[in-house]
Amino acid sequence: RPAPQLSAIRDHFPILAQTVHGKPLVYLDNAATTQKPLAVLDAMRAFELRDYANIHRGVHALSQRATDAFEAAREKVAAFVHARSADEIVFVRGATEAINLVAQSYTRPRLQPGDEVLVTAMEHHADIVPWQMVCDATGAKLRVAPIRDDGALDLQALPELLGPRTRMLAVTHVSNVLGTVNDVASVAQLAHARGVPVLVDGAQAVAHLPVDVQALGCDFYVFSGHKLYGPTGIGVLWGRAEMLAAMPPYQGGGDMIRSVSFERTTYADPPTRFEAGTPHITGAVGLAAAIDFVQGLGWDAIAQHERTLLERAQSTLSRIPGLRIYGTVPDKIGVISFNIDGLHAHDLGTIADAEGVAIRAGHHCAMPLMKRYGVAAMARSSLGVYNKEDDIDALVRAVRKAQVMFAA
Ligand code: PMP
Image 1 (cartoon, rainbow, N blue to C red):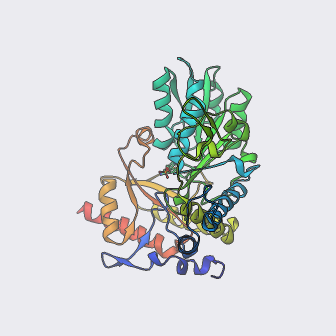
Image 2 (cartoon, rainbow, N blue to C red):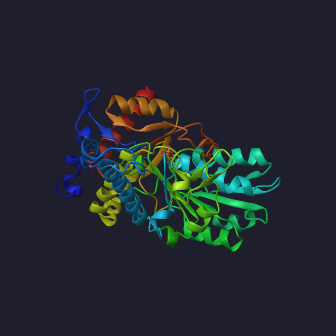
Image 3 (tube, rainbow, N blue to C red):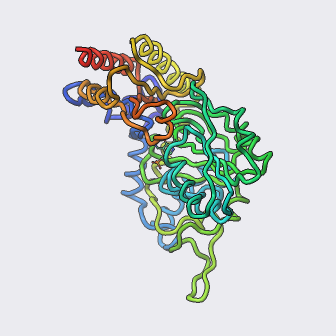
């Protein structure tokens, strides 16, 4: 298959070439999940047709080929995030599982009553609830770093919140609601100066900007394949080698052991220690193909394309009377959450759907952030590489139509 070009990108996504409710599909729900290009679907199908078997077990040819493909995917992910070694890459189900793994295995044993875990006001529930669970179990407290009205993290408030009892700081790289790109390197520096480890939720970052975990200076970085044009059910925990080495297993089972007897079991080294049971082998193959796909497009081309569309959307939407956009920092990525006076976000979403426009409406798994802005819900349009100017115009037409319908 020829290398993808942004100009002909839609040819790689046959799912986009359909009508819904009699209208051409306009897919603007990429922050929820992205569509898969043919290259990803082909790679998964070819693997299942030729090489599929269980990994790390058999001496037979298929098992060796499947193991090679799985481990090659690990190498690809390591290079993608600039890890020092593929041993720092743990395959998990997704960002959610990765955060739970770190919360339970790294943080929980280090929490005493009165200790603190610091998150930010813009976290997704996946980066709140696992920390709340370990705090509840140990008598530790969850603290929250505030954001400014424009959707930027309030960096000035951080030093005071990073106290002698802080045991972990968890922060999103990119907000799934506001589009804010956090200055994670500065946050990590502040935290490390006080001896606090840092987990970065990269779920919304990896499809939009290059990630270098060493330059970011964090200790853990997590993401999901399905927001990067790859499959669901596969995700990544990157952990600094020293951190992973200091962590007990998260789940027990096959594949994660060195030896087992009824008296005593010894565990394998990372990353195997954290990969109990048969993983989503084909998913890892699909994720590797997705990484090739975005790297083939190039970060500069992706950023430029998405910026053009974001600016078009922001300038046209903001001319609609009574429309408020949440998240207005200049260098945000292509997520636009908004509300219109007198109109419920769900009604907006439903009317947009009738026009063929797929957007999300609701709390976006960020109920505390909704509360911060004093709303129950927002409508959200989020961009991917295959969106085009017509998509933005269709969105704006749908929003205007909803406004007219509800004004009547
Ligand atoms: N963090 C953020 C910022 C997200 O947007 C999401 C997905 N909506 C997640 C974490 C959780 O990802 P997953 O559901 O794939 O585990």
